[in-house]
Length: 112
Length: 111
Image (tube, rainbow over all chains, first blue to last red; front, top):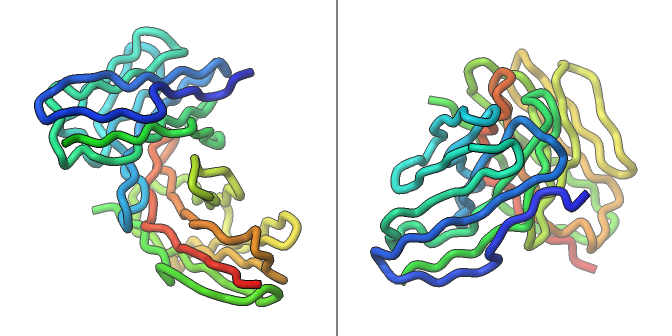
């Protein structure tokens, strides 16, 4: 199993550009989440999904969209990037909410 | 508002010392508390705690949860330089997989 994979590893955007951060898992996990990590702020939940076709907002959802058309994939979309979205983004998955979350390697995003 | 608070925010010790990291929480629909270790990459899982008073151990690391006083501690005995990392505490709400993280404690172990 590859576990949780994220692409790209690094990305630089200009303000106003759009992009999609990809996340995929091959463990047949139902639960998937996106977090951002900023210095001194720990990880903050952006959006999460408890299964294909079901998504919900986390703590800091503004400026981000998600969809979950398959169990394996949970892409995070930035429609119009802003410098405040400069951060490290982690995707995580678990079999159910009762299980350990496995994290992807992260995407370091810089918005100029 | 749900919150998870870790203390101290940073800690510097010497090899062989014992450290205790604290995590307090105020979270509705608590289901479990998790500890992660993060070393300049993705967090890696350490412990999941769901019941009060039951200590979980893994080598030199141990953790315990107090659901009455709403806190958990992570102990590391005989610290080594390889223990240097950010230690994250997170609380899971109900059965959603939704985690609320604390700010993290940065531990530096000097030789």
